[in-house]
Amino acid sequence: MAQTLDATDVDTQLDERLQLGSPWITLVWNDPVNLMSYVAYVFRSYFGFSKAEADRRMMQVHTEGRAVVATGTREEMERHVEAMHDFGLWATLQRIDS
Amino acid sequence: MIPFTRLGDVAVASFEPAEADVLIRLATEVQELLAQADDVVPHSPGSRAIDRLLPAGYGDEGELDAEFRRFTSKDLIDRKVRNAQSVIDALSPADGSAGPVSLDAAAVQAWLRCLTDVRLAIAAGLGIEHDDDEPQLAGPDRYLLEVYRWVAFVQESLISTLEADFS
Image 1 (cartoon, rainbow over the protein chains, first blue to last red):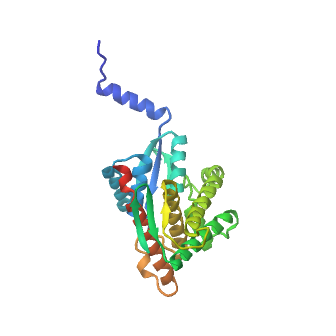
Image 2 (cartoon, each protein chain N blue to C red; image 1 turned 180 degrees about the horizontal axis):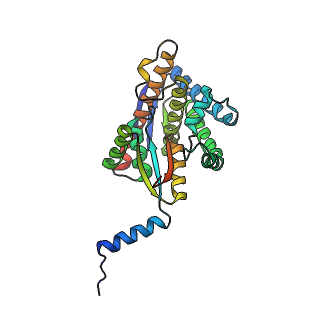
């Protein structure tokens, strides 16, 4: 018998996942130093974004002052933030609801 | 300078001796700055540069930032110092001859990061903190601003050689 998930099941699973340890995000902040081409390159090469997605998030950093580039556990986000600092980008991690 | 172009697996550029000297000096200054990261005077240009090279992980200016720094800064400093050394070595051939610079994939990554660190350090010294701070600089800072923009040109040409890696 085929198992299906209705929308309510998916929502419940997502809620559980968020409660079980994925409620952290990595933010990259705008700075006047880093080149737009470099920020887009870092997003593409490190996070594996497509060119279009990397450009979109880079522009979001530039115009809105910051963009979320990753979601996951605190440990994962700490690794990403350290990698961004390695590239010379200004990144922080925080709880998703803070 | 002949900007970076891609030749097979390597990125190649040529620098005038005076240009190579400037890059070597800037990379050395980043190394010296990082070596005294723990001893910089608060609110000095040096401490502003360190804040950009080793930014806060959480931005809470408290316990979390201090802990993040304790666990990451030593390795981060070591890697940044090695990146700078890669730039210095490539521009200082053992036989003293000034030839083209040829960077493999690992060296390209070191250069990208070091050129960023160099620009972050210059920007901290010049007080460039917002998107429209650059044009207002005048006087002696003008030369440093020209260098800052030239390093951006070098980095931009290096980035343009990397498109091939994605296809």
